[in-house]
Length: 153
Image 1: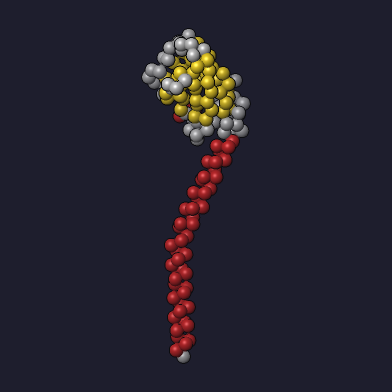
Image 2: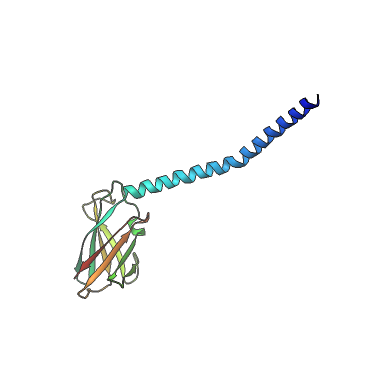
C-alpha cells in the first residue's frame, strides 16, 4: 500500500512540475518565435531592397545625385534615409529638409512612390559648387540598405 501512495504522490508531483515548467517556458518560446519571424521579415525586406547610385552632377551651386531602385519592392521613407557627401576623406552626413546644407528629392519617371525601376533625383542644397577633386556620396535607406560611389569634378 505504501508503494501505491508513494507512486501516486510522485506522479502528482511530476504532473505539477511538468505544468509549472510548461507555464514558465511557453512565453519564452512564443517570444522567441515572434523575434525569429520579425528577423526573417526584416532580412527578407533587406534582400529585396536594393538601390544604385546612377550618376552625380553639379547644377549651379547644388549637387544632383540620381538613385535608382533596382530591388523588387517599393522603398519607403526616402526622407528618413541618410545621405553622406563630401570630398574624399572629409565627408559628412547631410540632413534632410531644413538647414544648410540640406537635401531633398523628387521622383523621376512620374508617380508618387519609389517603386522598382524608379529613379529619384536627390538635390544637395547649400553645399556650393564643388572644387575639382574626388567626392564621396553614400545613400542609406531606413532598413540599412545602402550604396556608395565616388565622383570626380
